[in-house]
Image (cartoon, rainbow, N blue to C red; front, side, top):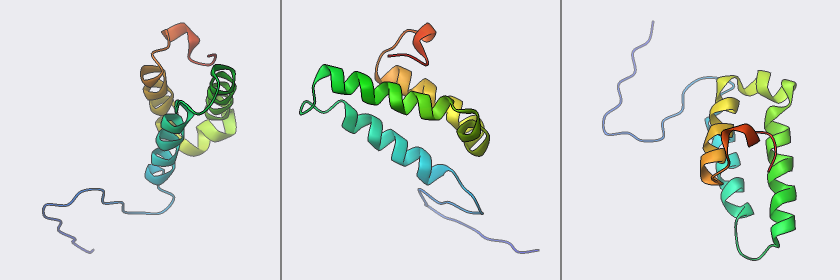
Length: 88
């Protein structure tokens, strides 16, 4: 057995196959989609694509509960009604 102590730490990631960095990447991507340099149609297409990827059964199984949590965060970020979780 090994003991590891952390003090005043942030962003610590331990273990194999962590999804923390993947979730961070999706959050950054979601923020970039809303940048003013793209048209509304491009934003809508990009949001639909991102939500489609996150809703895919294989992606959901790899990311586990983090996928549904991320979809909820994206819906809040984009202020989507709950019934539009998979459509923008």
